Length: 167
Image (spheres, rainbow, N blue to C red):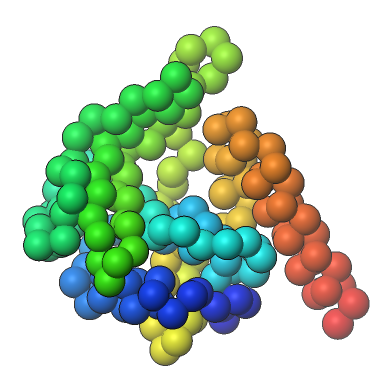
């Protein structure tokens, strides 16, 4: 699929630099959060770049981005989530690294919505960027209790479904 919306110039430079350092055809990661959503047509403001990966890859990525790392990879927990997390700054843009992202259910059990076999590729600026399908992202935002963003994603899914049926 082709990118439906573009990224701001600084985010564009940062993502291109990331893709040079950690080519997604060689390393397991996806662009999530606002940037990944925007490339798929969700019209929202982009503040940072979020990369989701697996436990083995996050440490390799951290090493490949060592000169940009601000916060080393560590276990991060909140009342509703836990993951491995680290932060880098590339071209002035914050890059969040996440792995083993788990959401806490009402019964306190943990669930993951991360399924790398479901990643899809967005053609953007001559590059292939891995993202999760919008439906997967909507479910993850719902699990995080972020109903407004989940609703925006679902509206975008419906808009594109209606556009295809009218074509």
